[in-house]
Amino acid sequence: MHYWLMKSEPAEVSVDDALAAPESTVPWTGVRNYQARNFMRDQMRIDDGVLFYHSSCAEPGIVGIARVASTPYPDPTQFDPGSPYHDPASKAEAPRWMLVDVQVLRKTRNLTLPELRADPDLQDLLVLKKGNRLSITPVEPVHWRRILKKLDAGS
Image: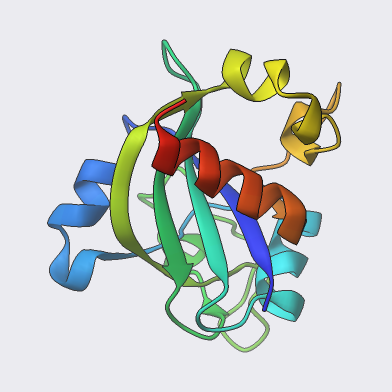
């Protein structure tokens, strides 16, 4: 089993939007970074753990616990000329961009970026590394357990 931190802008898809979706599941559309795409395509498996992270908002942070709910499949937004994620170079017979479905299991309090940075046990968490702007990053099991403990303790 692997663990992941997946960023979403709440104006695009928030944890509440995901919870309101059928079976609390949303397709993780719009990823247009090859490394993040490769994580979904090559490494994610059904039931992998996901930290649902709100980015590009007033208080970025972890706002939910989720799981990978599907195997990878082509992101349909790449073929939609009306989508901001349209990629005219991507072809149906050879899609460039993939996605997985993500199912939110529970909403949490917002475990903010400053709180994450303040915990010495999380200093190696990739989202905290200077210059890391990936929308999907792997999470070490030790970090996963620490974050769940912080969320369950409310501290």
